[in-house]
Image (cartoon, rainbow, N blue to C red; front, side, top):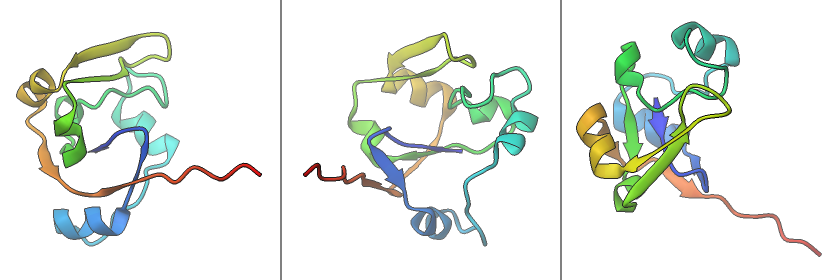
Length: 106
């Protein structure tokens, strides 16, 4: 599970190289649903460790005092300090994102 700011894009090649896996790709909704049976699809919290999934955090997240994310539903949100999140999840921190470039309006 890759955790990164919403304002960034995951660089799958960089993530693949840094984790040492052969392939890195975005999971389908079906794959997510199967691994998170108690969550609404698309609202999975970044607690992959609770589901037997390794968690990788982009290093830019460590600069934030607080983080916010879905709590398993589209109606509930969890806001906590990054330090508490790191303590609970014990993610592997690495660089694997790039800032999204907003399309120019003409």
